[in-house]
Image (cartoon, rainbow, N blue to C red; front, side, top):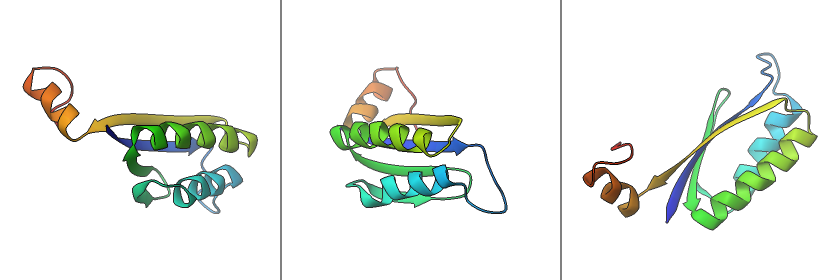
Length: 94
């Protein structure tokens, strides 16, 4: 199963990236995930389920330790599993 991770860390600082945002970027860019897109207001990455779950655990550990007060994330199933679910009438068909 392939998953897509979308996440943000807070608090925001528009003038300079906070330490927790830099740590989040490092975790995602240095990992084994693909389709990595890092931005000032949101980040995405894709990969096998085990790799995404491991990245989420590391992301939470390290960003909270670096001062994040909130980590918002969403994980979506990609590929055949998601398409089969949508055809059966469940899940988000995007």
